[in-house]
Image (cartoon, rainbow, N blue to C red):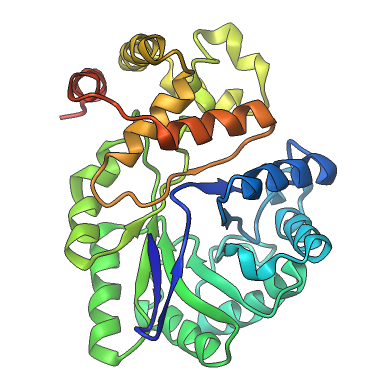
Amino acid sequence: MELKNLGKSTLKVSPLCLGGNVFGWTIDEKKSFEILDAFTAEDFNFIDTADVYSRWASGVGGESETIIGNWVKKRGNRNKIVLATKVGMDMGQGKTDVTKKYILKAAEASLKRLQTDHIDLYQTHKDDESVPVEEALEAYAQLIKEGKIRCIGASNFSAARLSQAMEASQKNNLPRYETLQPLYNIYDREVFEKELQSVCIANNISVINFYSLAAGFLTGKYRDENDLKKSVRGARVKDYLNERGKRILKALDEVSAAHKCNNASVAIAWLTTRASVAAPIASATSLKQLQDLFAGINLKLTHEELALINVASEWK
């Protein structure tokens, strides 16, 4: 995958993106460093975070960016990684905010926490349809001109608003969203595939989807209500424990058994076959989990295995 910077240059990124939402939340700085070291040791270079990680736990936010910034400074490897972060979620202002004034201020705060002079991919974390799409794009144009960000992406956009943003970019000679970060995995297919996928394909937007493992559900860790107590993410998994979810797990069990791997690897491998998906985002809290992600990138599923998974997870 290549992230284009206004046609002037490209940033080559690895086919797997490490999610930084767990840094400073479910794992501390020492463990986060261990995960980051292991990720980059295998020649993967794409790391995603957000200013709001993990405000839901601390009430403050910025913990993940701070840890990544400390790691980058200690390792001296800024020029070897592609660093992505996001802006717009409630960081104490009491609302989603994608106004130009707020974005410019938030970018400075993220740069400080990340201890870097530029962000490779800066993303609108959540759209606010009361704000014209041009306003955020104008903020990004200024930041790009100042050398503080390289290119931009969107997350949690509707197909209509994403299309509007692409049209506004072309009409007004503003930066365009090069990536979309939607909710997308074997279970959560409908929202992306119904409308967003066609917009991404038509506009050559690279998809870097979040929740690649459906908050851990697709690993097979959660099979019934009692399993929800195994993790702080358990409450998020409850909605997946239904007949369709069980069908999906059964298909994943069958395919993973054939390949002698874990369900997580199969879930990642499936995503690599999907139209417009360039780099699935997944987080890891242990080296074993990280190895499962690596295995998924290298796993090749047969047409029969893909059909089995697709039928089990069909939403139409």
